[in-house]
Image (cartoon, rainbow, N blue to C red):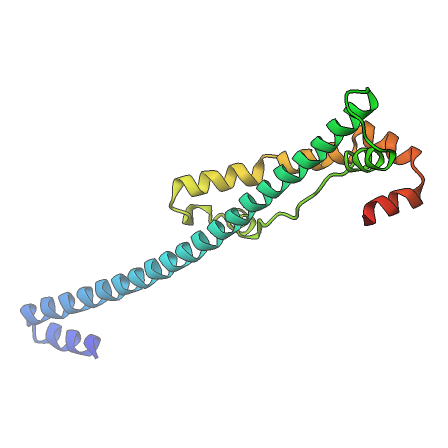
Length: 179
């Protein structure tokens, strides 16, 4: 329709009408592009808000899990110290209490990580959607530092754990674990 009008105006040499048609086309294209950009920006902002909320939730759970591990490992350490004190005569424990403390000193806890949001953001190159720099930096530190893995590995590979578990009959270990 516009093309037909432009051809008519060129044929009649109506330059003003040609310029008006050209301005209408340019303005229409500009408005179309601008609307598309606004829609894209709105969708990006929505995705950013969703990822920010998900990452915040994941990090809260990680913090809770970290606190759980600190308390758990503190209990394991307290049992190790209690057993060591009984063995070197600084304190008196019954044989059963000594055995329980010695067994508890061999335990470790490995926590499942909640990192799917972070992994999705990094694997798709979308980590920039997290505009809160502090949140983004915290997530990067939490999910890239090998503290959890190292702690679990140290618990599993502890020489004390290996020596104790190798010398203790399996039935006794099962009985201790169930109580």
